[in-house]
Image 1 (cartoon, rainbow, N blue to C red):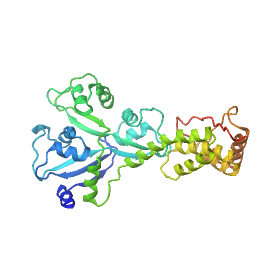
Image 2 (spheres, helix red, strand yellow; image 1 turned 30 degrees about the horizontal axis):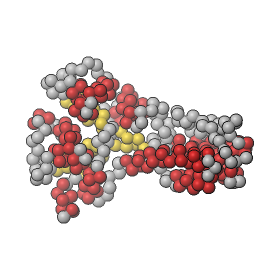
Image 3 (cartoon, helix red, strand yellow; image 1 turned 90 degrees about the vertical axis):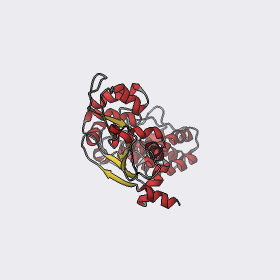
Image 4 (tube, rainbow, N blue to C red; image 1 turned 120 degrees about the vertical axis):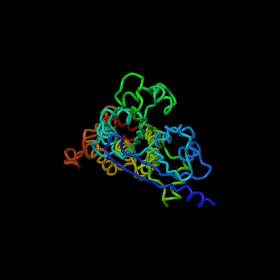
Length: 331
């Protein structure tokens, strides 16, 4: 029963990437079946029937009021895409690649935490889908903001992304709307998987896992601070074993791991942990006042063991400022 339903939907995943003005896109092709409406299709793929407005504009149905769909009609279902940050990539470079304009970097920053520091190496970032809205005769930028973002305050985002002033739009004027919430629902993922034979690779799971790891880093710091060094080592190695860490996460974990190893009288492992820190952050420093002499000694040995690492390691991303490493029990 489930298989027949999925086959009837005739969904397939189409992926195309370019540096054109409409950016890299992820689009699902859906063929309308009996009884479906735009609202029901939006509900299945996005978990939100109000997103039918996106389907209307994406498929050029606005001239028909967005209601005239027939069985067998092919609809494009746009979704966000994801990007794993490589060493040296900046927000402006990514904006130029995906949107064809470095000035659109603000949309990427807003969709990924709102911090203007450069993206962390290895981070799975979300790329908002640039929906093309064709203005009607009486459209205003505020109305477009309300339609897609649910709030007129988002007009600032639209002005910045399109580099336009004022509020009134001319009929036929194209406004790109960067939508960061066009994420496939669980039902949408199941529909795509049923048709294609594999789950859509959209990066959302990696992104969610990295967010969960961020939430566990304070626990790791607390273990070290409270002298729970065995628990700290276990947690640190579990996090390292996930294989999806960002550069900042790796540095943070190895800093805490090195302190725990010193406290457990494993200076050799502490040196190895600090070598990992130095490899990714050559200018890393420790607070000579708050850090124990034994930890400082391991840190110096790590530098001596990697004399060439400082010159060969990549330049750390902005925002990777050195943090003090304390050691309550490593004396």
